[in-house]
Image (cartoon, rainbow, N blue to C red):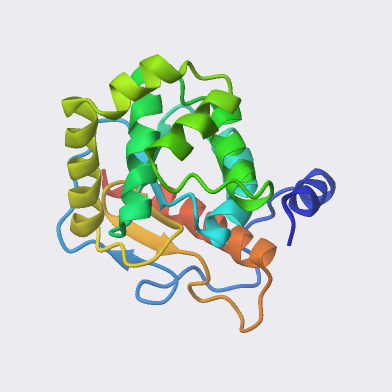
Length: 217
């Protein structure tokens, strides 16, 4: 499903939620409990999305997620963690963290990267390609190169990789909620479910996990 179709459906129907006729999400089916809980800030429920820019499912899920994030109350915080073991995915991880370090990782830039890679045929398969991509999105290329090759960005990449391992992330997009629970796209979805339906269910499960995290804080 194209992103413009997802946006149109969102405008018409919203995100929906877990149906009152359905049983509550089940541990081991719609979500997993982390083997080792992550440290959490008092009074906050953190939601972490694990993704990578080349993932078509992450691209389709992103507008749903953006809408959902903006609907959350003040005690819910959100952040993204790019993942991937392949050289190209690590290149895009460095791009994300460099933009973040510069204060240039806005929703417009984030969406622009997805659109460039999935809709506009941009390759960005090496450092020069990544620099050209962010420059077309309005980012200063000289400052970006400096951040891209910095020690701090390399450290962030290692931290993100370690966090994904600690959370047992083996597919994307995935959400970790409250430092205790993990859910992923399609978990428990009916066979043949659309990207939209699977994404809506994933976020409905996340809503349930936020309530669990609050209750167990």
